Length: 210
Image 1 (tube, rainbow, N blue to C red):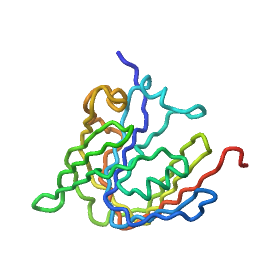
Image 2: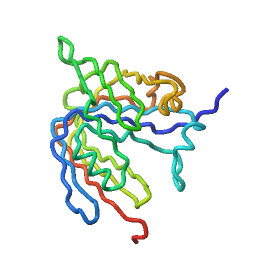
Image 3: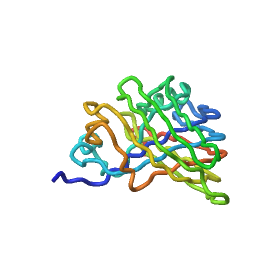
């Protein structure tokens, strides 16, 4: 029996990016504003043996994110700050509502230089009325030049359900991580997020800075 431990394999895909701008070229920090967005967030277990070699020294397995964007300026800002983000001009995010308008189908396809092609497909439901809440999401990345923090404030966000499957080549890095062509065990978290606005502040601390 293969031993497994939970890795927070989180995939966040944004339908709409309003704007992104550099606020400090010297520190490589910047702010991004999101408007009228939806997202799929899935979190489930993968093999510890496959995940461990991908984790940098000094970190314990707790989380991972797919750094892809269909906004070239945003991808370039991340790259300047040291995050190996990938610009995918063909990134596709489609949500097709049903005739009632309370649920629908999600289809996402993504690829990019150095990133294994993958796609997502499945059913989602819209959030229940009056289920809004505030939310704060923090992510950290350590590279050769220093440490980055992404802090996103959601004044209002609502969550619906999602039953989505990830598909990819079983010989790719992603396929090895999930142990085959498909992954649908987002047993820890699987949601459709809907929010009118959010602000992400990216700060960078160079190596050697106190």
